[in-house]
Image (tube, rainbow, N blue to C red):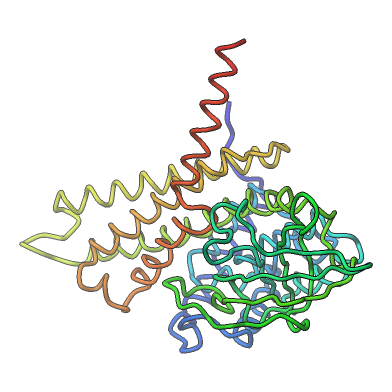
Length: 393
C-alpha cells in the first residue's frame, strides 16, 4: 500500500510555512520593493522574517543552520513557499541558491563549507552558477562548453564568456564551470565575484522577474584562482553538475506548483463571484471544464514530484524521473496559469492580480534547466536503450 501522508512534524512545518506566506508575504506583494528583481536589502528583510519563524533555508542540513528536509519534505514546504513570489526568496530556497547550497553540502570540503555554505545558509550572501554561455558555447548541450581553465603552477587561469547567469549582480559567491584546457573533463571553481578578470558586462532583460540579482552577461579574462578554489576534484565538473541539476529541476517544479495553485485559487474565486449571461461564471460549461482541468493537472504534477522526491530519498539517482517531472510540470503548470488567466479575462491580463506575473515566469521554466525538447530526447534515448538491452537478454 502506498502511503502519501506526511509525518506530524512535516505537516506542522507545512502549515507554519503556509501561515507565514499568508500572514507576512502576501501583504508585501504590493510593496514597491517587490516589483521586478528584488534588491538584496529587501531580500535580507524577508530572510529575517523567515528566520524569526524558524523557516530560513529549511533544505540545508542542521549542521549548517537548516532543518535538513528530505526531498519529500521539500516538496511539501516548497509548494507552500511558492504560493507567493516572495516565498522562495524569503525562505532562501530560490534558484540558484537552493541548488548551489545542495551541491556545496554534497561536494565541498569542510573548509569550503565553513567559508561559503554557512554564509549562504544564513542569507548573508547569495550565489551564482556560471555555466551557460552564448552561442556557440554551452546551453542545453554542456558538451559545447567553451570556457577553459589551464594550470599555472599551483593555480588555474580561467578564460571564457558566460550569459544568462542568474543572480550574478550582488552575489557573494560565483561557482564557475570550465573545461580543462589540456585534460579531459570540466572543473568547478569557487571564487569571490570581485576577483580580478571578472567583468559583469550587462544585465540581460528577460521575462523572468522573480530572481534576486537578475540575469547577467559575464566575461572571464585571465581569472587566476588557487588550487583551493576547486570544488571537489579536477575533471569531475560534469558529474557534479548532475548532483546539482537533477534535484534542482524538481525543486523548481515544487515552487511553481505553489504558484500555479495560487493562480487556480484566484480564478476559482473570480468564477464564483463574477456573473455573465445570467449566471455565475463557474456555471458555464466552458469555464467549469477549465477549472476541472486545472485541478487534474495540479494533482498529477504533485504526484510526479512526490514520486521523484521519494526515489531521491531512497538513494536512486532518478535522472529520468527528474526529467519526466520537469517536462510534465513545466508544461502542465503553465497550462494551469494560462487557463486561470483566461477565466479572469481582462482582469487576468492586468496587474490587479499576480496571475499575469506567474503566467510569464512559469512559461520560462520550459526553457531553463533543460528545454522540454532536450528532456524528451533524453527520455526517449534511455527508453530505447533499455528496450534494446531487454530484447537481447
